[in-house]
Length: 145
Image (cartoon, rainbow, N blue to C red; front, top):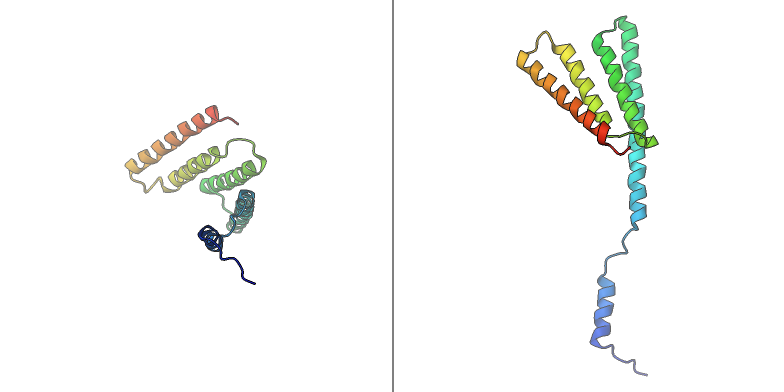
C-alpha cells in the first residue's frame, strides 16, 4: 500500500510547525511574577531598613550620644518605611516619598558638612532642596490619588 506523497503546501506547513517557537507565556504569568518579585524586594527593603535603624539606635545607646544628623537619619528610615507602606496600601502618591527622602538626605548632608563646606556647595544643595520641595508640591497638588 502506497502512502500519498504530501504536496508542497503540506510540507511547508509541517516544516513551519517544526521550526515554530514554543508557545508564548501568558501575560498574566509574567505580570504575576514581576509583582511577586516587587513584593519580595519591598519586604527586603523594609526589613533591611528596620535592621539598620535598630543598629543605629543601639550605637546611639552605646555611645550615649544623639546628634541632629542621627535624628535626620531616623527620619530617612521612617520615610523609606512609609514609601514601602504606600506601595502596599495603594494610598497616596508613591512618587512623593523619594522626594521627601532626597530632601531629608540633603538636609542631613548640609547639617553634617556645614563647617567644612564651600559656601557655593551649600547654595547648590539649598537650591536642590528648593527644587525638590517645589516638585513635591506640584506632585501632591496634581496627583490623582
